[in-house]
Image (cartoon, rainbow, N blue to C red; front, side):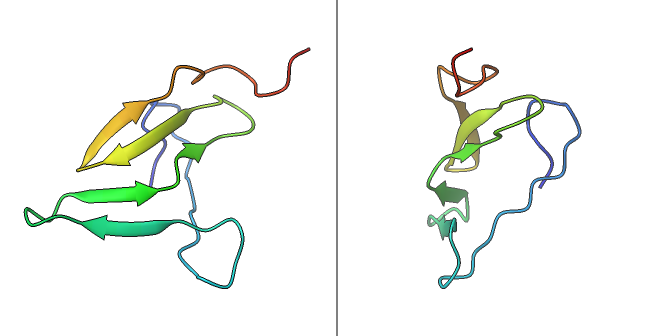
Length: 69
């Protein structure tokens, strides 16, 4: 998937249960996708978001580095 912030970064999320980190995909009755856990970019745009019921829900720390400098 492409980063929803608009930076154009290609995000690759592992769904393989034997790998870490990994994400799980769920679909509701309307086939809307949800991902668990949240997605966090640790470089570049530092996006941090959830995908819930086909909608991007931004975390409050999105856009800021997780490491205080």
